Image (tube, rainbow, N blue to C red):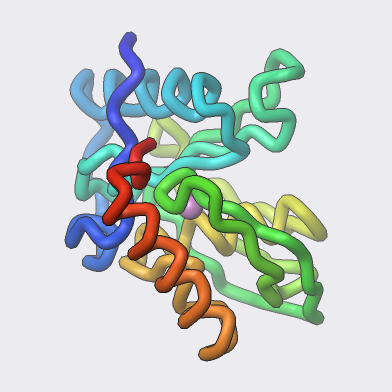
Length: 172
Ligand code: NI
């Protein structure tokens, strides 16, 4: 296992949809193991494969950010099938270091996916879990949280990113 470098905005791999996984092989298992290690090293509560420059539709989530054992969830080919309600809360992203903004998300989502044995799973996520699922599924669809901000907040965030890039401080 190894920590992989996290890709930063505006790398194109973050802005293109990922590809569905047809089968779970050793290479995918190695990717997932590295994604979990990378998420915990940062630390973060979620990571999408394209954030480590891999274009497969896989995400990992650990709402404890590695603080509690057994909390890691792995989802292959996740799809949100139902959304309900809304919540506003602060969000960050490992591909946007130092950028935090209030984002409105559904309060509850139902989603389908496969586990690492390619068994179908279906879950209902609420609150912070729903926020994490929506954020990572967005990544897999090539959508970054910048696009969920109001136009004003987006402009401010882009200005801050540009400043950091010029200073050479836009690094994971
Ligand atoms: Ni993110």
